Picture 1 (cartoon, rainbow, N blue to C red):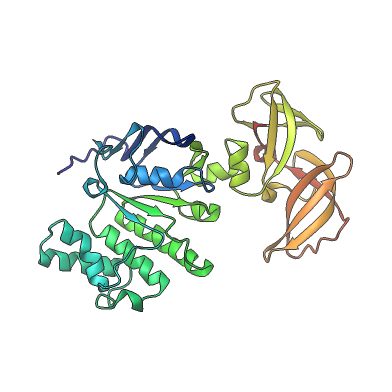
Picture 2: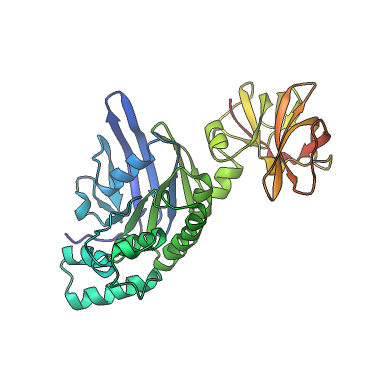
Length: 356
C-alpha cells in the first residue's frame, strides 16, 4: 500500500488511546503529537505504559480505543509490516545464521527491492553506521556495540517514517552506552528520521531527546523539551523522577508567594495550584547557593552526610530549627565536615511550586 505523506500535520498523532488489561489501564486516554524530525523519548518507571505505547505505535498491540496516525494516514488497524515504522529491540533480534549484509538487506528483500538497489542501499547503511568493512562478517563475530549498529542499519535501510527503539541501550555497559547515545543522536540528525525511544534512564532521556514524555501509571505526567521538564517539572512525580531535589511543603498565599516553615517564599513557577492550596516547592541541588547572595534566603543548615561523587560532593543537610532537609552539591574542593554550618539561598526563578 502506498501512503500519501502529509507534511502539514503532526508526523505522529496519538489520539485518546487506551489499552486495558483486566483491571489495569496500561494506557489511559493518551494523546501525543510529534514532529517529523523529533527525537522523542518515552520515559518512566516499570509499568508506566511507555513500552505499551511504543507497541501500539508499531502495530504490535491493538488499542481498545483511540487512533494512531503517521504522516497524516490512519494506521490504527494496520499490522506492523504494513506500517511505515521499524523497531530496534533491546536484544537486537539479528539473524545469527546470516552475515551482517544479509541481516541489513532482509527488510529490502521482503519489500521486493531489486538486488542491484539492495546492494547500494546496504552499502550506504553500513557506511552510515561506521561498519563499511563488516558486511561479510557473521553476527557472532561482532561486539555488543557493533550488533547495535547492525540493528540500527537494518531498521533505517528501509527508510521508515518513524524508527521505534525499545530500550536499545539497556544491555550495554556504561561507557559503550554513552558512546551509542552520541551515535544515535548523530544518526537521527543526519537522516532526519523521527525517532521514538523508550527508556527508564533519566540521563539517557536528557542526552537524546528533543521531546521528553514522562509517563506514570498509564498517563502522561509531563511533556516538553528536556531542559524545561527537568528545570520546571509539571508535577511532584516528575520532579522526583527526573532527578534529585529538595522539597519544601507550603501553602499558596497567592500566585506569587507561599507560606512555609522557612517563612514566606516567592514562587514564580506555579503548576496547577491555586491560592489557598497546599503545594510542594521544588529546588534542584545545583540551584542552591552555599552563601547569602541569592535573593531568597533558605536559612542556615548543618551538614549531616557527604558523599564524594568525583566532580562534586552530594551533601545532605538539615535546618535544625524546622527539621527541613536539603540536598546540596558542593565543589570537590569543599571537603564538607559533619556538623558544618552552611548558609543557603537561591534565586526566585529556581523555585517551582507543584500540587502537593
